[in-house]
Amino acid sequence: MKITPEEKTALKGRGYIMTNDGEHFIARIISVDGTFNAEQMEKIAEASRRFGNGVTAMTVRMTVEVNGLTYENIEPFDKFIAEAGLYTGGTGSRVRPIVPCKGTVCVHGLYDTQALARKLHETFYKGWYDVRLPHKFKIGVGGCPNNCIKPGLNDFGIMGQRVPGYDEDDCNGCKKCSVVEKCPIKAAHINDDGLMEIDREACNNCGKCIDACPFDAVSEEKVGFKLFVGGIWGKRQRLATPLDGIYTEEELFAIIEKCLLIYREQGNTGERFGMFIERIGFDNFAAQLKSDDILQRKQAILDAPLHIKGGATC
Image (cartoon, rainbow, N blue to C red):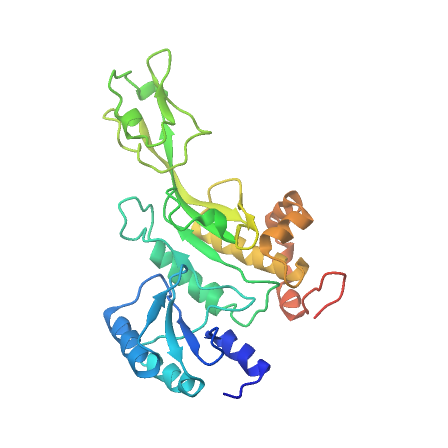
Protein backbone atom coordinates (compact mmCIF):
# COMPACT_ATOMS: atom_id res chain seq x y z
CA MET A 1 0.00 0.00 0.00
CA LYS A 2 1.33 3.39 -1.00
CA ILE A 3 0.04 6.17 1.21
CA THR A 4 1.80 9.37 2.10
CA PRO A 5 2.20 10.63 5.68
CA GLU A 6 -0.07 13.54 4.74
CA GLU A 7 -2.80 11.17 3.54
CA LYS A 8 -2.48 9.09 6.72
CA THR A 9 -2.83 12.22 8.87
CA ALA A 10 -5.85 13.38 6.88
CA LEU A 11 -7.53 9.99 7.25
CA LYS A 12 -6.87 9.97 10.99
CA GLY A 13 -8.52 13.38 11.19
CA ARG A 14 -11.62 11.81 9.67
CA GLY A 15 -11.60 8.92 12.16
CA TYR A 16 -9.79 6.32 10.02
CA ILE A 17 -6.74 5.30 12.03
CA MET A 18 -3.97 3.04 10.73
CA THR A 19 -3.32 -0.02 12.90
CA ASN A 20 0.07 -1.30 14.02
CA ASP A 21 0.40 -3.68 11.06
CA GLY A 22 0.85 -0.68 8.76
CA GLU A 23 -1.72 -2.05 6.31
CA HIS A 24 -5.18 -1.81 7.82
CA PHE A 25 -7.38 0.85 9.41
CA ILE A 26 -9.96 1.05 12.13
CA ALA A 27 -13.01 3.23 11.51
CA ARG A 28 -14.13 5.15 14.60
CA ILE A 29 -17.89 5.68 14.43
CA ILE A 30 -19.28 8.54 16.52
CA SER A 31 -21.95 8.09 19.17
CA VAL A 32 -23.94 11.31 19.49
CA ASP A 33 -25.37 10.63 22.94
CA GLY A 34 -23.92 7.27 23.98
CA THR A 35 -26.59 5.27 22.15
CA PHE A 36 -27.21 3.66 18.75
CA ASN A 37 -30.61 2.55 17.49
CA ALA A 38 -31.27 -0.96 16.20
CA GLU A 39 -30.91 0.05 12.55
CA GLN A 40 -27.54 1.63 13.25
CA MET A 41 -26.29 -1.40 15.17
CA GLU A 42 -27.31 -3.65 12.27
CA LYS A 43 -25.57 -1.31 9.83
CA ILE A 44 -22.36 -1.38 11.87
CA ALA A 45 -22.43 -5.19 11.99
CA GLU A 46 -22.99 -5.45 8.24
CA ALA A 47 -20.30 -2.85 7.54
CA SER A 48 -17.87 -4.82 9.69
CA ARG A 49 -18.58 -8.00 7.73
CA ARG A 50 -18.57 -6.33 4.32
CA PHE A 51 -15.63 -3.93 4.60
CA GLY A 52 -13.66 -4.97 7.68
CA ASN A 53 -12.60 -8.21 9.32
CA GLY A 54 -15.84 -8.80 11.21
CA VAL A 55 -14.54 -7.43 14.52
CA THR A 56 -15.81 -4.30 16.24
CA ALA A 57 -14.64 -2.74 19.50
CA MET A 58 -16.25 -0.36 21.97
CA THR A 59 -13.99 2.49 23.06
CA VAL A 60 -13.99 3.95 26.55
CA ARG A 61 -15.59 7.11 25.14
CA MET A 62 -18.65 5.39 23.67
CA THR A 63 -17.58 5.24 20.04
CA VAL A 64 -17.49 2.02 18.00
CA GLU A 65 -14.42 0.99 16.03
CA VAL A 66 -14.74 -1.31 13.03
CA ASN A 67 -11.47 -3.17 12.54
CA GLY A 68 -9.60 -4.44 9.50
CA LEU A 69 -10.48 -1.93 6.76
CA THR A 70 -8.20 -1.69 3.77
CA TYR A 71 -7.38 1.68 2.22
CA GLU A 72 -9.56 0.87 -0.80
CA ASN A 73 -12.58 0.15 1.41
CA ILE A 74 -12.58 3.44 3.32
CA GLU A 75 -14.71 5.48 0.92
CA PRO A 76 -17.26 2.67 0.24
CA PHE A 77 -17.48 2.10 4.02
CA ASP A 78 -18.04 5.81 4.60
CA LYS A 79 -20.95 5.93 2.15
CA PHE A 80 -22.45 2.69 3.48
CA ILE A 81 -22.69 3.75 7.14
CA ALA A 82 -24.00 7.20 6.13
CA GLU A 83 -27.18 5.44 4.98
CA ALA A 84 -28.01 4.93 8.67
CA GLY A 85 -26.97 8.45 9.70
CA LEU A 86 -23.58 7.29 10.97
CA TYR A 87 -20.22 8.98 10.50
CA THR A 88 -16.66 8.66 11.70
CA GLY A 89 -14.47 11.11 13.61
CA GLY A 90 -13.42 11.64 17.21
CA THR A 91 -9.76 12.47 16.66
CA GLY A 92 -7.54 15.54 16.47
CA SER A 93 -7.00 18.77 18.38
CA ARG A 94 -10.65 19.71 18.61
CA VAL A 95 -13.71 19.16 20.76
CA ARG A 96 -14.10 15.40 20.97
CA PRO A 97 -17.40 13.44 20.98
CA ILE A 98 -19.47 14.05 24.10
CA VAL A 99 -19.57 11.21 26.65
CA PRO A 100 -22.72 11.00 28.80
CA CYS A 101 -23.57 8.45 31.44
CA LYS A 102 -26.91 6.65 31.27
CA GLY A 103 -28.55 9.14 33.64
CA THR A 104 -31.52 9.36 31.26
CA VAL A 105 -32.67 5.89 32.38
CA CYS A 106 -30.63 5.34 35.56
CA VAL A 107 -32.45 5.37 38.92
CA HIS A 108 -29.76 7.72 40.23
CA GLY A 109 -29.88 10.16 37.30
CA LEU A 110 -30.86 13.71 38.23
CA TYR A 111 -31.52 14.87 34.64
CA ASP A 112 -31.69 13.65 31.05
CA THR A 113 -27.98 13.20 30.32
CA GLN A 114 -28.44 11.92 26.78
CA ALA A 115 -30.64 14.87 25.78
CA LEU A 116 -28.01 17.25 27.12
CA ALA A 117 -25.30 15.32 25.25
CA ARG A 118 -27.20 15.74 21.98
CA LYS A 119 -27.37 19.51 22.48
CA LEU A 120 -23.67 19.64 23.37
CA HIS A 121 -22.85 17.50 20.33
CA GLU A 122 -24.62 19.90 17.96
CA THR A 123 -23.17 23.02 19.58
CA PHE A 124 -19.60 22.03 20.33
CA TYR A 125 -18.67 18.82 18.51
CA LYS A 126 -20.29 19.74 15.20
CA GLY A 127 -20.40 23.50 15.67
CA TRP A 128 -16.71 23.72 16.59
CA TYR A 129 -15.48 20.83 14.43
CA ASP A 130 -13.37 23.01 12.16
CA VAL A 131 -11.90 25.03 15.05
CA ARG A 132 -8.39 23.87 15.81
CA LEU A 133 -7.53 23.90 19.52
CA PRO A 134 -4.14 23.58 21.25
CA HIS A 135 -5.03 19.96 22.08
CA LYS A 136 -8.06 17.67 22.30
CA PHE A 137 -10.93 18.83 24.51
CA LYS A 138 -13.11 16.18 26.14
CA ILE A 139 -16.50 16.81 27.72
CA GLY A 140 -17.98 14.33 30.20
CA VAL A 141 -21.66 14.42 31.20
CA GLY A 142 -22.46 12.82 34.56
CA GLY A 143 -26.00 12.50 35.82
CA CYS A 144 -25.24 12.45 39.54
CA PRO A 145 -22.36 12.39 42.05
CA ASN A 146 -21.79 8.65 41.49
CA ASN A 147 -19.10 9.71 38.98
CA CYS A 148 -19.61 6.81 36.57
CA ILE A 149 -18.11 8.70 33.62
CA LYS A 150 -15.63 10.53 35.86
CA PRO A 151 -16.41 14.20 35.14
CA GLY A 152 -13.33 15.21 37.14
CA LEU A 153 -11.01 13.48 34.66
CA ASN A 154 -12.36 15.30 31.60
CA ASP A 155 -11.20 18.63 30.24
CA PHE A 156 -14.70 19.82 31.07
CA GLY A 157 -16.85 17.81 33.46
CA ILE A 158 -20.56 18.12 34.22
CA MET A 159 -22.28 16.59 37.25
CA GLY A 160 -26.00 16.68 38.00
CA GLN A 161 -26.94 18.28 41.32
CA ARG A 162 -30.10 18.36 43.42
CA VAL A 163 -29.48 20.63 46.38
CA PRO A 164 -31.53 19.92 49.53
CA GLY A 165 -33.20 22.76 51.38
CA TYR A 166 -33.67 22.20 55.12
CA ASP A 167 -35.96 24.04 57.54
CA GLU A 168 -34.93 23.14 61.08
CA ASP A 169 -38.23 24.49 62.44
CA ASP A 170 -40.05 21.66 60.65
CA CYS A 171 -37.85 18.98 62.21
CA ASN A 172 -39.73 17.02 64.90
CA GLY A 173 -36.65 15.34 66.29
CA CYS A 174 -37.71 11.86 65.23
CA LYS A 175 -35.82 9.12 66.98
CA LYS A 176 -35.72 7.28 63.65
CA CYS A 177 -34.84 9.94 61.07
CA SER A 178 -35.58 8.88 57.49
CA VAL A 179 -33.32 11.65 56.13
CA VAL A 180 -30.33 10.28 58.04
CA GLU A 181 -31.18 6.79 56.81
CA LYS A 182 -31.44 7.94 53.18
CA CYS A 183 -28.12 9.84 53.06
CA PRO A 184 -25.59 7.50 51.38
CA ILE A 185 -22.53 9.45 52.54
CA LYS A 186 -23.67 10.23 56.12
CA ALA A 187 -23.77 13.99 55.59
CA ALA A 188 -27.04 14.08 57.55
CA HIS A 189 -26.87 13.31 61.27
CA ILE A 190 -28.66 13.94 64.58
CA ASN A 191 -27.12 16.67 66.71
CA ASP A 192 -26.90 16.90 70.51
CA ASP A 193 -30.31 18.59 70.63
CA GLY A 194 -31.93 15.62 68.91
CA LEU A 195 -32.48 17.51 65.66
CA MET A 196 -31.30 16.58 62.20
CA GLU A 197 -28.42 18.53 60.63
CA ILE A 198 -26.90 18.45 57.15
CA ASP A 199 -23.15 18.90 56.88
CA ARG A 200 -23.03 21.14 53.79
CA GLU A 201 -19.31 20.55 53.33
CA ALA A 202 -19.85 16.79 53.14
CA CYS A 203 -23.14 16.87 51.18
CA ASN A 204 -22.64 16.06 47.49
CA ASN A 205 -26.18 17.11 46.45
CA CYS A 206 -27.24 13.64 45.29
CA GLY A 207 -30.83 14.49 46.23
CA LYS A 208 -31.56 11.18 47.96
CA CYS A 209 -32.76 12.92 51.13
CA ILE A 210 -35.19 15.26 49.39
CA ASP A 211 -38.83 14.48 50.27
CA ALA A 212 -37.66 11.69 52.60
CA CYS A 213 -38.84 13.55 55.71
CA PRO A 214 -42.52 12.83 56.56
CA PHE A 215 -42.78 16.34 58.01
CA ASP A 216 -41.39 18.02 54.85
CA ALA A 217 -38.34 19.40 56.65
CA VAL A 218 -36.16 18.66 53.59
CA SER A 219 -37.23 19.89 50.17
CA GLU A 220 -35.61 20.72 46.85
CA GLU A 221 -33.72 24.02 47.01
CA LYS A 222 -32.02 24.03 43.61
CA VAL A 223 -31.41 21.77 40.61
CA GLY A 224 -28.51 22.26 38.24
CA PHE A 225 -24.96 21.31 37.42
CA LYS A 226 -21.64 21.26 39.18
CA LEU A 227 -18.82 21.99 36.74
CA PHE A 228 -15.19 20.85 36.63
CA VAL A 229 -12.38 22.21 34.47
CA GLY A 230 -8.97 20.89 33.49
CA GLY A 231 -9.12 17.17 34.19
CA ILE A 232 -6.54 14.95 32.48
CA TRP A 233 -6.32 11.16 32.29
CA GLY A 234 -3.41 10.04 30.14
CA LYS A 235 0.38 10.05 30.29
CA ARG A 236 -0.12 12.74 32.90
CA GLN A 237 -3.04 12.93 35.30
CA ARG A 238 -4.74 15.95 36.80
CA LEU A 239 -7.95 15.99 38.79
CA ALA A 240 -10.20 18.76 37.48
CA THR A 241 -10.78 21.89 39.51
CA PRO A 242 -14.44 22.46 40.48
CA LEU A 243 -16.01 25.82 39.76
CA ASP A 244 -17.89 27.43 42.63
CA GLY A 245 -21.65 27.32 42.43
CA ILE A 246 -24.46 25.34 40.82
CA TYR A 247 -25.23 26.32 37.23
CA THR A 248 -28.22 26.26 34.89
CA GLU A 249 -28.08 24.68 31.43
CA GLU A 250 -27.88 28.11 29.81
CA GLU A 251 -24.97 29.07 32.05
CA LEU A 252 -23.29 25.75 31.33
CA PHE A 253 -23.23 26.35 27.57
CA ALA A 254 -21.92 29.89 28.02
CA ILE A 255 -19.10 28.67 30.29
CA ILE A 256 -18.01 25.95 27.86
CA GLU A 257 -17.84 28.52 25.06
CA LYS A 258 -15.74 30.84 27.23
CA CYS A 259 -13.42 27.96 28.18
CA LEU A 260 -12.84 27.10 24.52
CA LEU A 261 -12.18 30.71 23.55
CA ILE A 262 -9.78 31.35 26.44
CA TYR A 263 -7.98 28.08 25.70
CA ARG A 264 -7.70 28.79 21.98
CA GLU A 265 -6.49 32.34 22.48
CA GLN A 266 -3.94 31.72 25.24
CA GLY A 267 -3.05 28.02 25.12
CA ASN A 268 0.12 26.74 23.49
CA THR A 269 -0.03 24.12 20.74
CA GLY A 270 0.22 20.67 22.34
CA GLU A 271 -0.76 21.95 25.79
CA ARG A 272 -3.65 20.17 27.50
CA PHE A 273 -6.39 22.34 28.97
CA GLY A 274 -5.51 21.39 32.55
CA MET A 275 -1.84 22.23 32.04
CA PHE A 276 -2.89 25.54 30.49
CA ILE A 277 -4.97 26.39 33.57
CA GLU A 278 -2.04 25.55 35.82
CA ARG A 279 0.30 27.70 33.75
CA ILE A 280 -1.83 30.85 33.83
CA GLY A 281 -3.19 30.17 37.33
CA PHE A 282 -6.71 29.07 38.25
CA ASP A 283 -7.64 32.44 39.80
CA ASN A 284 -6.68 34.18 36.56
CA PHE A 285 -8.67 31.66 34.54
CA ALA A 286 -11.73 31.90 36.82
CA ALA A 287 -11.67 35.70 36.62
CA GLN A 288 -11.72 35.51 32.82
CA LEU A 289 -14.70 33.16 32.97
CA LYS A 290 -16.67 35.73 34.95
CA SER A 291 -16.09 38.38 32.29
CA ASP A 292 -17.87 38.64 28.93
CA ASP A 293 -14.83 40.27 27.31
CA ILE A 294 -13.74 36.99 25.74
CA LEU A 295 -17.13 36.65 23.99
CA GLN A 296 -16.79 40.10 22.46
CA ARG A 297 -13.53 39.00 20.85
CA LYS A 298 -14.86 35.63 19.67
CA GLN A 299 -14.45 36.03 15.92
CA ALA A 300 -10.99 37.55 16.21
CA ILE A 301 -9.92 34.62 18.42
CA LEU A 302 -11.30 32.06 15.97
CA ASP A 303 -9.57 33.77 13.04
CA ALA A 304 -6.19 34.12 14.78
CA PRO A 305 -3.42 31.49 14.53
CA LEU A 306 -2.63 29.26 17.49
CA HIS A 307 0.27 29.99 19.82
CA ILE A 308 3.42 27.90 19.97
CA LYS A 309 5.35 27.83 23.25
CA GLY A 310 7.93 30.62 23.12
CA GLY A 311 5.73 33.24 21.48
CA ALA A 312 5.45 32.02 17.88
CA THR A 313 2.16 31.26 16.13
CA CYS A 314 0.99 28.61 13.72
